[in-house]
Image (cartoon, rainbow, N blue to C red; front, side):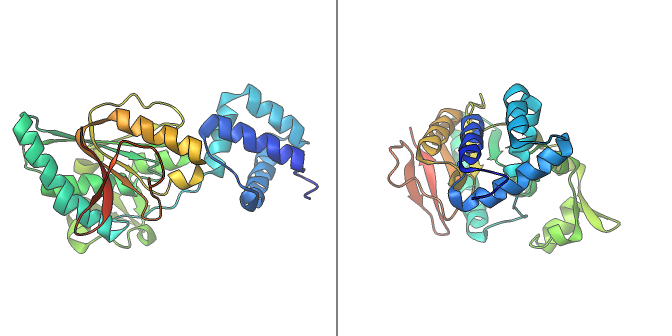
Length: 271
């Protein structure tokens, strides 16, 4: 048993984080939580874990900072080629067909759990390339991490983070600056970054696509079900949901329809 984080305190912090965000800390991840708490105690100039527990219960801002520190922000441009191909070659053409039938020329996409923005900008670049020129593109990118959202909003990435961007996209939509690359304004202007806790309703409606990849794995079954239900409410009829390749809605009582394309398996809201 850790002298710093007793079993009782581990349970307390695990419960308060779950109640605030739906993120579930298993015993296997206890050391991660412990290291983050030690860091926050030092920064907050507090002596005991009990004092910090009282602080997060009384300060919504410190709770946000703690949630930011315990989330994992791993992403990259054009992540998962099969998903990119599905979006480019199946989803976008389907949306264009449906939109033309309805007389609607706007496509709304939500990158939920966007981390530092690479996924959201990938989506925006694909839409810019594949949609008819007279279509409007609206991409919303949200995350629990305020630090990550600041990086995404700025749209500047070191050269190491650009790996995987096709040369065509790199030349067209990025500008090299010093040791990194700046996403050009024509793409940055399509993406709105916003703080959002998936435990709550985003109040978005009539979305055409939601990307929420490798986020559900941090939630337990009950929290996953609640998040997926809120995604259903946010999506328009005949819309699409992308989750991580290692995630699945199988066994969950959900109204989404499983959809197998030539490239990858995704989910669809058909009604």
